[in-house]
Image (cartoon, rainbow, N blue to C red; front, side, top):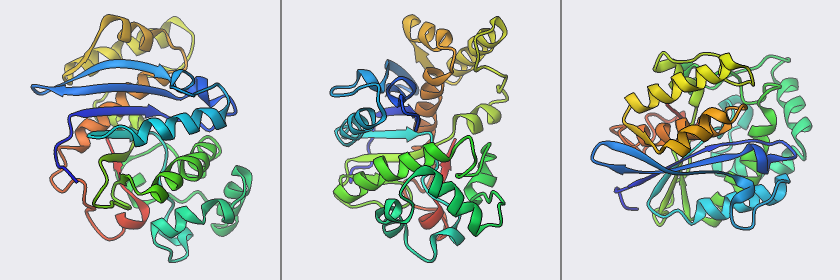
Length: 269
């Protein structure tokens, strides 16, 4: 696998029934110490995409597997706390994920039953101060469909490196778990920005300005889209792309930092 990556893509993920409207993708490339965002679009606009979840995720799989030379930051948990994997390695866990839990509700209830209704976080969640555990009410559908319908099929095909969980030598695409909320906290710019009020819009303007301070270059129309999109999905996709760019500067990337990460994953921010 080549160590040179010149494109950085961010995906704000969704497990909603109309995921094609809610999944946004930001595409950028490195240029003299800057990351230039050249495109932003919803998954419904990908080739073969659609509004419904099945079409959107199928299009996203095809898109991701074709991005040779890119690091793609995806905004959903790639794994669970090690105690919930029952000693499986991550590839085995991903391969049997849907058989173990046939739908998102079975996944959430199964995890809660195993933990006495507690929401356990992975070590990487605690380190990154992510907002929620993987099976939290606000996140469990993203986790479920992200692992079952995106990571597991891509891992099975063997053409991508899912850092730091599985990395076949022939892989030409790298996937990393990104957390826009964690990065915005680190940048000390984490206002309430998801909503339709003028205050929410003003917060999105401040975040765009902070991203530009971090050497992210946005064309005016892309910045305008991120500011106008009230759900914050377009903006989160751009932040996820920045997470992917920052991941490439990790001294040991794409290797794990320790043995636990080979099972639980790592959050890049």
